[in-house]
Length: 277
Image (cartoon, rainbow, N blue to C red; front, top):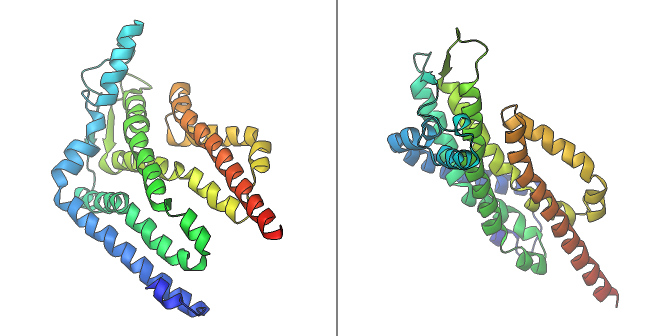
């Protein structure tokens, strides 16, 4: 729709708003459709996915237990169950959690299509060569997002639940978490990591429009390290090991982003030289 409308003429501001409106409508419909599927698959979404990280047989805990046993301090990472219960404190608490969890799941599953609609909106404004060089945008961005979601689910979530679920200020106080609190932790860890892993894509486009350069990224690398540690402290429990586990892949993504920015600048310089030559 967007491409056909823009062939041979420029659109007005209101025309662009109308196009954006239809792209947003289609994105919403895709998220709702995937959300409805997640709503119907209640047992799998809740019992298997959401509540999986609270069980001792979760793959991450099993791996940590094996590593800890090999190193000789299995008492810290091997357990039969986590010492907390999850309860719903509101009349409509479980139904509300079901609805919002389904919407979140719908967004995660429909993310490639959301990117596709975003691409359809901006692609008519790109030059032919820019459109060709950016063909892998949806595939790469989707891969990074799902990689981040998996990292959040299998690394950040179990580390957070294990630490916070086992933490006690006194033996007289026992942990009982509300359903909203537990789901909020899983949701924020997975979605936040998914979006954080989009950093190379963001840097690519910021470099393309001239807002970021490799020199800028290198110059402020040490400040970025501080920001990464702060971000890791926000989305993980306040223990050093968990923060390092989360910070390392983000720092790797930052270094990859520098090389991506360098490649974009080099390619732009080559094109500019060819045009003037």
